Length: 183
Figure 1: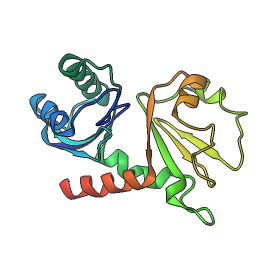
Figure 2: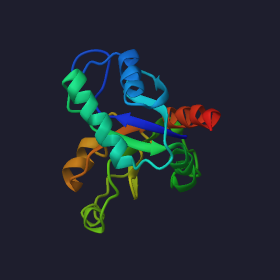
Figure 3: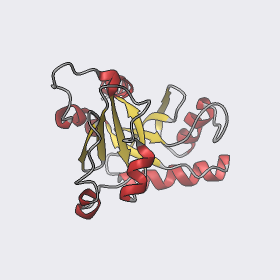
């Protein structure tokens, strides 16, 4: 069995799209995924499934089940444990001078971006904030913090016509460590 991670967009414990994490983990088990475990209360689920599953198939199953059980239309971005480990290899900002992981986020996209979508972003520049698009992820580094940046999920969704959800670098490295123990 392979280890997968789902990053759900817009799930929380209070307010809009409220889903208790214990109920979310139970939903994954009901779908036939083993060892479903949530990490923090924002829709990160680590689970096991057959190695031949496609991310798009997993995503569709989870999205349909959430809609059926909880009544919410929630996008699910699926990555394998290997995909998560590879993020450190392609992260363009990790080795910059004075890199601060607290100022780093990754936006996980449902699908790989097209050349046309990337072209729409070619002239976008909001220094000191910067971003890099890599297949199904957008790496965002905001050295002054995320409070005033324009480079966040909604901005990219509107400009590029994509669906995504962001996680900070600390969350990503913690989930990667958890998945590493399951391999």
